[in-house]
Every structure is written in structure tokens, then in C-alpha cells.
Image (cartoon, rainbow, N blue to C red; front, side, top):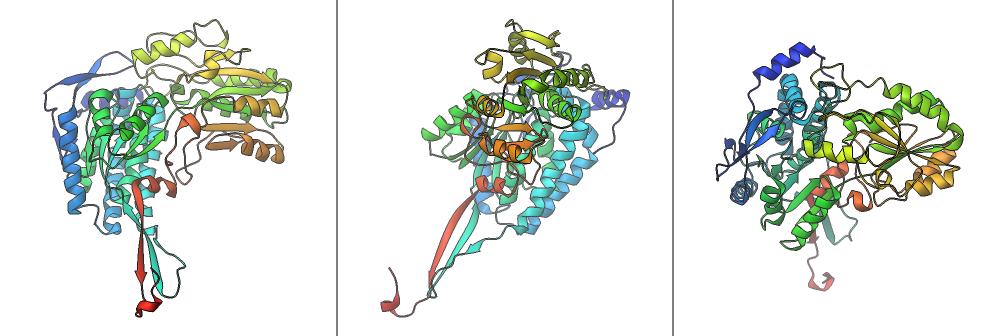
Length: 499
């Protein structure tokens, strides 16, 4: 964790920032070939931070060409694993030296609180890069138990040129989740950051080049989904795409792959994640703290946010009292003030979407008073289990409370969704915890806590929450490698050979 500075110190850093504005391809910053730009906005103030290169198909083609050149000539893909490790560790060290600058840039561009950037996003981003770097020379290939006359080697090879399409809610951390294993595997990558939050990806690419990542290996192409994301998804010379974002956009990437070269697709999409609290849950104050953190951390702009509280009747009143008390400890305001825990939503369009859910007439137990760009922690008590706030991913600081009579009803309600990303269950009975965790259809289930695991545990979902691979853990490397079998016949006599 980095040291927390004062508000005035963060404001001084913000005034002195030199913001990157052009795409980063083949080792240098480049404007869009068309010369077009788009505004990147500070969502907390509405002010224009910078005009970013609005790239298009030509820029994507150029980036893919340079990434392919880098991959084929082996300047990165055929380096000794320990050399790749050293470069990524140098990148992590450069990030540590520039940690306050990166945190402020992230906060300005996304509306995230500087507190979260400094205590969560930056430390975890750096740790992610180091973890995958250290893993590079520790993943072994295999020899199968073939006959005495044969040797069968099972090898991992880098998949090639990979498109990495990022969301806007965790710009740096999702970048690390993807480039960490992709670069560790030896791939060349083209990063497409969300147009709302391009700044830190561009700065990271610059730092990576300084650390020794060769030109053409890590490229960042800025622009919109139709102008950059779709050409990347359809490109015939891109071998794989790893996408994090909405389920709707994830479906598009499946179509792009089907209609082009059948490139491999990994999707990490949305969630409508339940937090089940049973009547034998212990330490309700601690439970309430986890519920509040799960629902309101990062302004609820989190695919694994606990947006549905499913609580058993016997503990509902006491639990809600404690939840309301903890939620009041989350002040909202200027993201650069480290005292604040709730910042601005990422854009005006997203603010309007979140606000629309608060205008549907459901009982508001807390919050709901919005102002431009800001939505406070809001709690809705809902009886209609088909209501939009229960079914749809709001992606804001809104917690829907649903009441059930028993564990079986709670599990059924938890699974009554098209998603399956994450879930939590709170109970003092270990058998109920394990049975509940097994019964919930989700990629990650936490017991008596909110969370996603850590860098060592694979993260991803079921059903509309995505498929095709996992982020984090050793399993993250699977989506950036291919498996090859080399079968060696050791027989000398033709009669002994098996054909």
C-alpha cells in the first residue's frame, strides 16, 4: 500500500500532470492516421482533461502488423523466460516510483476515489505484474506416460497476437490482469482501453517500453468500440481476444470471431451477484460491513458487486440497521479528497442510467438523492422479484434487498438470474455454508465475506457472465497459450512401429 497524501498534495500532482494523448504503437506515441480526436472528461467536474487520438481501422491494421512482426521475429516471444520476468519486474518497479502520478491520473479519468486508487488499484496492479512475472519460469511443460518406444511432450506455446479489450471501471487493474499473463506467455498485444478511461493504459505502455518491453510487443490503440474494438475483433491476423465488459458487447465479439478467423475469445462479462444472509449468521456488524463494501465499493461500478441482498426474515431488521450505520460512514464527494469513499460515476450517460433505476418507485431505505455525476449509497427494499433493479445490472451504488423464509428459497432466488459471476453466503453453520456454496451457480462464492479471492485464484463466471478462460491464478495463462503435443517414435525396427 502506498502512502496516502493530502488533498492539496493530490491537487498539486493533478496540476502538474503531462497527460498522454496519442496511441502507443511500435514503441512510440502516434496520432490517429485520420488526425481525429475525442475528449476525455473528468466525470467529477465535467471538464475536458485531454483530447485523445480517435483511432480507426487503419490504426488497428498498423498495430496488428507491428505486433505480428514483433511476435514472428521473436524479440519477445523467444526470449528466455527469465529475461521476460526481469523486464516485467522492472515495469512494476517503475510503477512504484510513479505510483502517486498514476493514482491521480486514474482518479481524474474515471471518477474513482484517490483512496481506492492508492490503497487497492495501484498496489494490486503492481502485485499482479510481479506475480505473473515470477510465474514465467515456473510453469513446466509435461511428458505423457507413453509406451517405452515413444516419448510424448506436451508443450505450451504463446497464442500469438492478442487483442485485449478493457472496461472503464478498473482501467489499470484490468490492464494488469490481461497484460500480466499475456506478456508472461510471450504474446504480442494490442490493448483497446475504454474510450472513457484511456490515460493510464497509455502511460503504462510508455513505462513498459522504458522497462525494456520491445517495440511492437505492447501497443495501445485508443478510440471507440465500433472504430477500434470491432476491427480488432474481426481482424484476420489477431489470434485471440480477451474481453472484459458488458454481456451485450461480449456477444458481439463472439460474432466477430465467427465471421472472421475463429479467433479464440475469452469473455468476462456482467453480474447480478447475490449476498445471502441466513438467520444463523454470526457477528451481524461484521456481516453488514462486508455487505456495504460489496455493494458500494468503487461506486458499485464492479462486475462482482453484491447488488442483491437476500436476507432471511429473522435477521432482516437488525441487519439493515447495521447496514445503514455502516453505509453512513462512506462519505461522497471530490475524488481527490482521500477522506471520501464514494466518487463520481464514470460518465453523464452512465449517471443517467443509474438514476433511472432510482425513479422506478421502489421503497428507498437510504440514499437516492443524486446530483450531477454523483450517486450516494442507495438501498432499495423490493418485494417484486422480477423488478428491473433485481434483474438488471445497474453498475452503480444501489443495493436491492429481498426477503426469504429459508435457505432453500435463498439459493433458488440467488440462482434466478441469467448471470453467474460471484456470490456470498453468510452463516455460522459450516455444512450450510459448503452446501450453499456448492448449490450457487457462480464462478466465485465467498463464505462469510465479500471478495473475489486474490491473484492466486481464478476469476470468471458462468452463463451470461462469460466463459472461455479465467483471469488471475495460473489458469489465466491458459487463454494466452496453446497446447502442442510432440510425439517421438523411438523404434528402430519398422515392425515395432505403431502407425
